[in-house]
Amino acid sequence: MNRIRTLLWATLFLIATSAITAGAAPFAYVANLGGGISVIDTATNTVAATVQVGIGPQGVAITPNGAFAYVANFDSNNVSVIDTATNAVVATVPVGIGPFGVAVAPSGAFAYVTAFDSCAGSVSVIDTTANSPTVNTVVATVSPLGGCPTGVAIAPSGAFAYVANFTANNVAVINTATNTVLTTVPVGSGPRGVAITPNGAFAYVANSTSNDIAVINTATNTVAATVPVGVGPFGVAITPNGAFAYVTVFDTLSCIGGVLVIDTATNTVVTTVSPLDSCPAGVATTPSGAFVYVTHSGFGPSANTVSVISTASNSVVATVTVGLAPEGVAITPAIVPLNVAIDIKPGGSSNNINTSSQSLIRVVILSSSDFDAFARVDPSSLTFGRTGDEQSLAFCDASASDANGDGLPDLVCHFFKTLTAFQLGDTVGFLKGRTVDGQPLMGSDAVRVLR
Ligand SMILES: [Ca+2]
Ligand SMILES: [Ca+2]
Image (cartoon, rainbow, N blue to C red; front, side, top):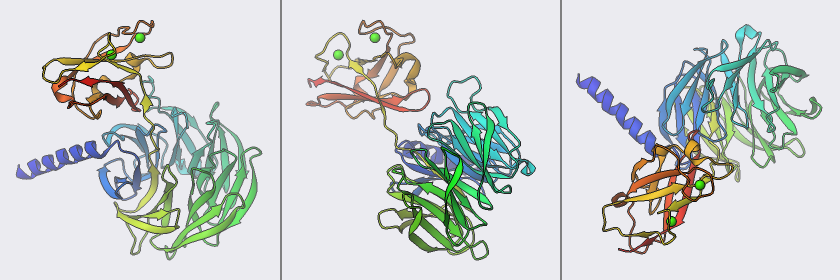
């Protein structure tokens, strides 16, 4: 009984701490093949949460709005969907046998999950659109691909997915409009990681057994350059400015290797971060491009850790201990909150607030031609006051009403004045919250705090 109670308190503590830490992007989601996802706060390089998912989590990708992480569980043949605000698993999606890589379309509408399927190979297409009737179900399957598919990347246009067929030594190009294979591009042997430049012009493919990188021109779907790297490459990440490709390499017997930095203008290796032990495998860049996170999936002194590399010095600046055999890694994007127009105390512009009275403050979130406040805002997420972080919500009206007479119905909410923390001299009131599909929002309006 005491043991159960201790477990319960430990669980509650974990939920409480993850709720506090989540939301301040960016976070690195690390898939530990030995079990669980380690969530690293990149501001402090500490593990902020550990999320239990399916068996053998391999690939991980995050939606463009940062709201969800999709995890391919190789040994349980499914995908776990993590809400990044709470770090709770909100859905589990059965896919093909042996899911490996995952990528989310830039639109946020679909996730593409590769699966070995006895090396016939398939890609499961998951609907990732919040509020869609088919959200988090497989809406299409592309099969067969002709070889055990591993890495996958989606072009910035969203029109094509590039899938590395490990045993077929080629890359399948999938037309995402029809979910059919448009063409296959022969590359070196054992292709694993794939990354596409931000301008969409080139796909970089790590050929793990021919020890080189194939650079595919995506306009012609032919190999434009081959970059020899000397030892087996595994993962590829391209900096947000498109200037450099960071490639993990290691010797499969010794697990020793490093990270190579390829100048994408010349397709030459300009710097190496080495030696790194324990099979440096997965690689991802922060949204700013200032740091690269590298997982150590194998044996050696750095086993079960993530190395943080500064792209300014190209040296390891931090080491984070995670779960067993970390391999896949994805980092949440820089989230720019949606700016919404609000009106504090509608009907007047003076917005006088008398803190000595016990009443409610009415705040309207105004709709615009491309923003339906009543439909898009999650009322339960709203906080309001002198910083915008105050938990002061009383309630929102159950129906929309047009507060400013522009013909567009608005969302009207009420906040406890005593919880807004307004002080004499404050001139601005801030509102924060999220849309129903998880995007942060904020708005502000002038106030005059009387006493
Ligand atoms: Ca007003
Ligand atoms: Ca209106």
